[in-house]
Image (cartoon, rainbow, N blue to C red; front, side):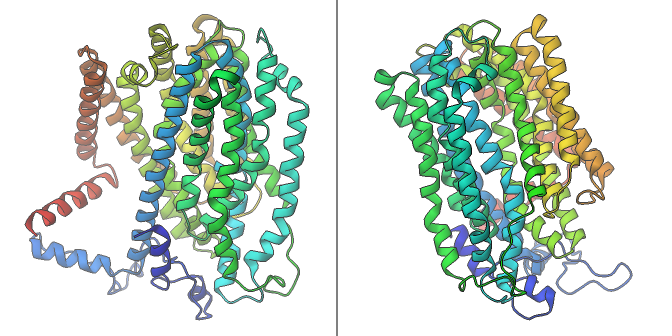
Length: 588
């Protein structure tokens, strides 16, 4: 069953926005509380499962009672949505690896790839500002509120009114800024990488990649609107279309255009991202009535410019770590920027996959905040932080233990030599030290912006991290080269994560910070032990493929055993659920 079908069939299962408002009109998507509980001193509701004896019959009865909870349908939908999102994101990430492999195979790690990666800064920034973070923090809460008003039977169609008030202005801004980047490409390249020996190739590539500002802006707008409607398939599939276009352009035009073919693929891939989502968004817009005004009969107003400014400045500041890295690496020998890029792409895969859960649950948190249900939002955020930390730490342990084998298998062919493998593997292990910080920043910042109100604290925290990155990188690049740059990145983002955790409360969703930090410490200890053990085992195997298999197996087993021993929240129930499903399937 597809995610969209599950969303439609789950309507009216829980206590939706309409029920909460007392209007009797339920929305077409489930929004029950994350957990159901009665008063502290009163009897528990009948829908809450009670303790039963340890027999198989008792466990089955408890499972049936849990399945009958109002929140169970929403949890199942979120699980399916997360599964679909992760599956499509993995496919997009694998194609992203294929893109990097093709770039390494066709053009190696030299001055040409350095020039392209300077131009690659534009789509990197555009993706962060316009699709992944940035505007998503503004648009998803706005569309969630509009969807709720539509479900309550508001006059006209609040969703169409929001689109009419925001899309034309944003599209004009995207087009204008993209044109400005095309015209100012020589100055941008000079500012980003003043040490390049021949900047002309980088300028040509930048002018091609600058077109993605317009296409990424529209793609991010469509993604935010669809996610607020609980439609996750099309938004999760955009990077499949994007990376396919880049790979195809490199192989078809690489011999004639060189690395410029990859930049052309960026331009084509951006357009495909919009086309992949437009039909689904059009179907959602057609369901409502004509947008004659807001529920109060007033014309729709644009979103708060202060909110947009704080969100975009935060995302811009966060992505500026890449600028610092490439600025410092441009003065190092040729290939330094490429080694940093390949290491970063591989190291960040665990982070990207772990944050897919937050991508699915962000509309739920925004909806809970809009309804004033702070407890439901807090529980959801706390569970998300624990789960994403556990996931990224397991991936970090694998990356640290098997870095040489991963890089050799992925990239060492064609123009990518064994020396490039050794340099990239050394960098990736240092980068991995900051993966938990990167993941926590990505998860925590959603809580600050889910209410749709402007706040400057995330920008302050990110600015402090960027300053630390620049200062530490300038000191470390001399003695340690690219590894010093990677270490500075890890230190800066970890500082930002600590500041964001400290600031949770009145500025954001009031989570129980000490309990969350204590819970994250459990998988952290498990990951450290698993990484050391898996690395020693993988090092003793000559074959890179066999070494990767041995290392991954050892890391997974050690991590799972320690997570079980430490009673990591969410890990033991998930493992029991899988074991129970296997046992039930065996006896059927």
